[in-house]
Image 1 (tube, rainbow over the protein chains, first blue to last red):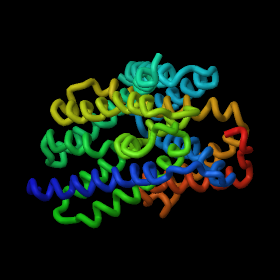
Image 2 (image 1 turned 90 degrees about the vertical axis):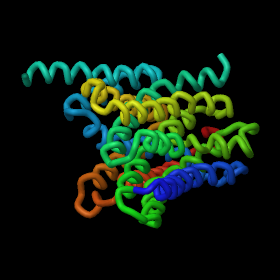
Image 3 (image 1 turned 45 degrees about the vertical axis):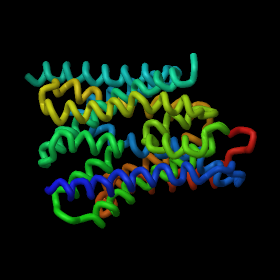
Image 4 (image 1 turned 30 degrees about the vertical axis):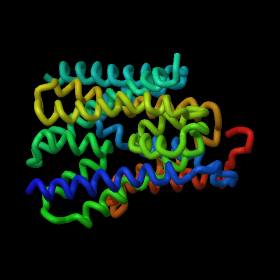
Length: 107
Length: 231
């Protein structure tokens, strides 16, 4: 790939991604009053996060079991009201420990 | 503690998660024939996961500019909904040039954390964006330069950080309000359908996430509208 072509691609890639994010953000100055739209906007983050997590989480690690362990630990700690950082780190530790045990068993 | 510092702290798990994802991106970009500085430049100017992975795939072929544009639009359309949603939660000083500048960092994860705030200030959003941006940039650099030197098991474990964070955002809200459970279960069921069912699974993951989330949120909003004083 020539350098010129790379920069055209880069311009399209970063430009379109930026505009999709920034234009609606900057354009919407008023508070939305419509009850349906407000409710929709309230639910959308939780729906997006769920759709991004499941089933993708099970394919993020080397083993399904370790991902499941991470998910289980996350849910348990989140239900106890632990902070984002604590839950995230605990999920990583759960995966690491599970995969270490699995590696011992397999070898 | 001021808003910027609080945002910075909230950004730690996102930054960690980004490190592992962008590390993979760096490795892949170099294996696709890009040089390390090109991989880093893409990450620094774009800051998105699925879009960048698809983008370097298109770059393998010469002159497919329209294809690049269409792939980015379909993968990234979800950001528009996030931007609209968050525009309703920012405080009165967060306007004009600040929205144009900080809108650049509207990623899935930053949006998720910001939207769990009652009132999003410029300083908080800027703080929240800092570590993820650094993580995304340096992860790409390390991946592109060092490739497979870091222990694989560590990267595998780090990849759960982002999902752990998502769970920590969604679960407490499910406990607070029953209708969120409905939205979550519906999004989950649709997402699995789009992942496994023939035909549906051919739709890009970015677009199918948008479709699942919009359907679930529409149904939840129709069946369980939120009362004015609750939002």
